[in-house]
Structure formats: structure tokens, C-alpha cells
Image (cartoon, rainbow, N blue to C red; front, side, top):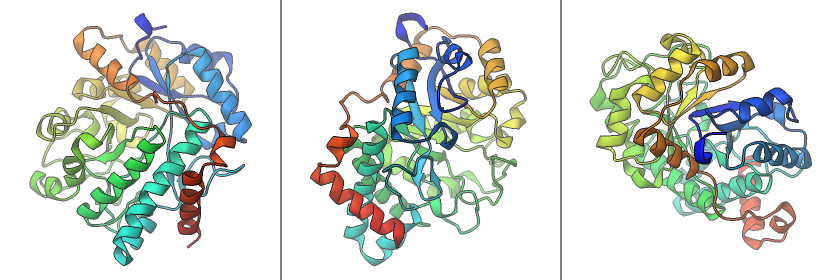
Length: 347
């Protein structure tokens, strides 16, 4: 266990639907501060709740997260979980009726967070703040809209819904992944635009939402006219986020096992580069071997900066008690919001 219960800078995953001894060893490592879940970790709500309870028992206070945005990026879909719409549906609704879109965004955020928290999940990596240029297959309908103003306002409403259920938020992928066609999971995307153009368009939602963002995840995209390094490994980009935009929350790296992170070298090299650039926490997913390598090779940091990062990470762990699943089914706000989410998802 880390000293004084502090959360370390590594978020990793677990192999299956129950914890193995190796999972528990990794979760208890002093460098570990978070666990991310995937569809392979889900069978039904009872199993998911038992898994999150086991993770919290192995490491009290550890942050449990998931990519659960809606549309094609929704890890848990059965046994009562509401089918959530892709965020583009909210943008399309905005174009028809602004007030209905704002209300629907809040409703969807509330349902998303309420259901996850009822099963012991602390955080979803949402909202996507990338703009919809109609070019990126990996972003696509995960984006709210092409207009950064619309993206900003809808994301604020979604974040309000998350907060009503006691969940923080994480905007991604700073400063923007929507312009490039390449998928950073399997490629190394390069965006040739200049700084002024990116800040005036793609990165604008991060500036406009400001203190309303609890966390941010940079893109594994290289913007060579700004820096030779991908944004998540770039002191320049993360300084723009921290100093110029005044962001005070957690900065997560994207998954270090993705191809877009390979430019930094080994997984340990990538983690050092991300943390050195200003990330608070690095993600390593889908490779127990790389997770073991990272935990073995990355050195624990001490001092004010490390303590500040640990405190920021801990602030994402919900402080209020969640409604359990049975309570949700009698909660008027939840039932009304769920109806809105289902209607948009099936439209």
C-alpha cells in the first residue's frame, strides 16, 4: 500500500470477471491508483458489483473507471443498463430544439452516472469534446457536433447530469482528435494545423468549460507545428492546458499500449514522458505483461508535485453515497431521465 493511503500514478485493468491473485497483486502495488474496466469484465450487474467490491476491498479508495460514453462506446449494455445514445444524437437534437437537447444531455449524464455508481464504478471517461469533422472513424458519432460552441454547451449539460449523480467528468481528447483520420489505437495520427487554428476551434471547449472539467485526457496525436511529441507527452500542450486555460483537475494519459504512444519507446519510457510532461496518471490496458513491466520499472516520486497529483486523483472518487439499483427504479428523476435516454437511443 502506498504511504498514507496515497493513490499512485498508474491506472491498470484486470483480466476477467473476478480478481485473480495477480490482479490483486497489481492493484495493491504502491504505484497503482486506479483500475479501468472493460466489456470483458462484465457479465451482469450482480457480478459487476461483486467485482468492484473486491477491487475496493483489495485497495480501499482506489479509483474505478470505465469508458462508458453511449453509442458504440458503452461497456455495460445488458441486465438493466440503459442503452445510451451516441452523443451525435444530442447534436442533431440541438439543431432541431436547443432546450430539449440541453435537458436530454443532463438526463443522459444522470442516467449514465447513476447506473455506474449503483454498481460501484466511480468515473466514466466522458464527455468526448472532439469536434465532428466527418473524417475520423474512431471519433465519428462519439462527438456532439462540429461547432465547438455547441460541443461546449452540451458537454456542460452532460457534466451537470453526472454531478447530480455524484460523478466527476473527464473531457477528451485534448486538444482535439476529430480532425485527423488516423486512429491512434492502431496508428500515429499527425495533425498539420497551426497552434492558432487548433486553439480557436478544437481546443476551445476546454477553455470555455474551464473549472467545470474535473479531468482531461490528451490525445495520442502529434501536432508538429506546435510540438514534435504527441499531446499527452508534450510539456507545451499540457502547459497550455494548465497555465493558459487554468485547468486544475486531473490529467490522464490515454492508454500507453496504443500505437499512438509507441513513439515514446517502451511502456516505461512512455509513462515517464507522460508524467514528466504533466500528466497525473497514466493508463496501461490490455497487457498484463506491460503492466508488470511498468510497475517494476517506474520509480515512485515523492514531494509536493506527487502529493498534489495523488490528491487530485483522490478527488475524483465520489464522496456521496450512490442510489442502489432498487432505489433507482423508484426514483422519479431517474425514471424520467431514463425514458429520455432510451428514446434518443432508439431514434
